[in-house]
Length: 243
Length: 275
Image 1 (cartoon, rainbow over the protein chains, first blue to last red):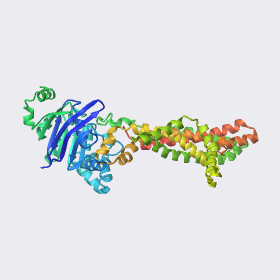
Image 2 (cartoon, chains in turn purple, blue):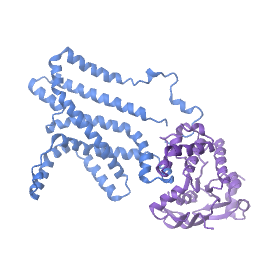
Image 3 (cartoon, rainbow over the protein chains, first blue to last red):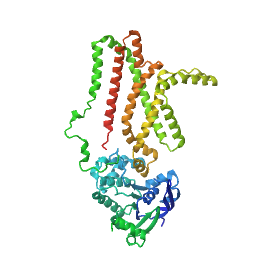
């Protein structure tokens, strides 16, 4: 089966820093891949390359059979990929409802009524229907992140990317966001998640990846990964699991 | 902007002062506008000679001043936006042109610019016209009011470019990234996400520019445009009463600038979003 995301030998430099050193990765439809690794290991950069928020210097990325090479292709691919950020990035000047309907109307050319109906369904799904008319600042971090997930889902993406979605949240709000993500995996959504939530990884991931210094170090199913004999993996896991 | 997303329950209510009623929310500085307006009315009614005569004489000048200011300001908003986006452009040619424009215009006094457009620019056009044997250009004469509007627009557009640039740069990068990741183009993201937020940031400095422009419009009196200041000078030349004339002119400017300042404050309040 053709992978829905095909990454081949990607290189990326930030000035003198060689952030990605020849990363290759295939993700298949319906797969949930969790990427972990120390800060500066290039995991967020890799994720951001998939929808071309970050340009890469060398290599090839093909999403759903569309190569990321022209401006038009990049916009087409972005429509198929939902992205959730660490800092939520809700549009602060718009209400929750408007956050969910803006891109539907501008990009998907949906009518106002239709986009609002879709938005209300999604808000119900992430459990914050009552906040439709609120502004982002009036919401807690967990609520904002759930709105951000709903905003991405409103575009009917085939793939969802999560860039440390719970890192900016207070501990008691992490679960409400992870529950929404868990529900998404049950629906068969293809997901690439950068996160150190090991509980989530254990419950949801089909595959786990450890990155360090711009390379993929280890790659396995969660069962094998947590029991890995790779020294680098053991060391990193001992740190995140506080063992 | 996204610095404090973690509001505690009821946290957003903190910006509302408990018990603050409707009266407390009316901007008290309107009182100052009314005070100056009343002062003008008192002077005009209590001492009709010369104050009423001055007011009647400069009446048309007020219209000219307001017209030049309003036209130049609207054009400045547009030119400033173009200049500001140019200063942020990744295209080096566009960036270079925008930067050159801002640097040159900022470095020349407004009065000198005004005189140049009024006295030097027509000669340039006429000379080129004669050289090309093109009579429409050879017989070019500057329309004083339009020349003034153009000169103010070009000058204030440069300052406005920098205000827009600062405003756009103050919006966190994540806003643009979120918009782009939803499939919106750069233009759509600017139009629907970045600029509406940047506009709220730049509103106070833009209000400042409007008031500065209103006052600077008095410089056109030097190039024979019959604005408020020019009409005041003409009245004084006949009647030799500087105290009354310039007090009256000053009060008229003051009532206009104070009124504008309240207008800006009102728009600011209307478009404010709790942060």
